[in-house]
Image (tube, rainbow, N blue to C red):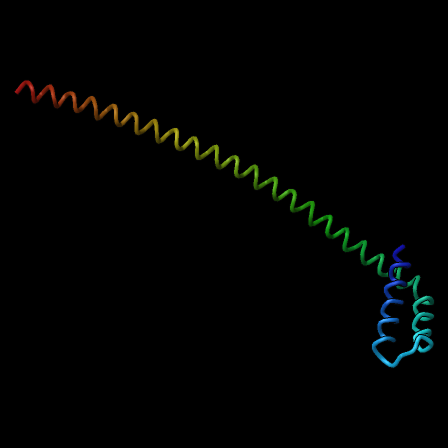
Length: 114
């Protein structure tokens, strides 16, 4: 199928070239013949190149998936850590507030005793 598509593309180019230049269909015939002679080798080379590109793209896609999973995991860990810090700070604030309330009551008692 790839060879057929390449041949069609080549024939389209030849017809386009002959329409836009002084090249006639008869003059373009050697190009068509040249393509057919080298078509299998060219198709094989192109197929090999495309397979390499596809394999590389698949490796890149796989690595991107791993990176995205790592990012999601890291984000969840960070959110959990931040929630723990917020809870600790709330506890510290509540503790300090309670201590200050106790101190304030002591001061009020001392002032009322005076």
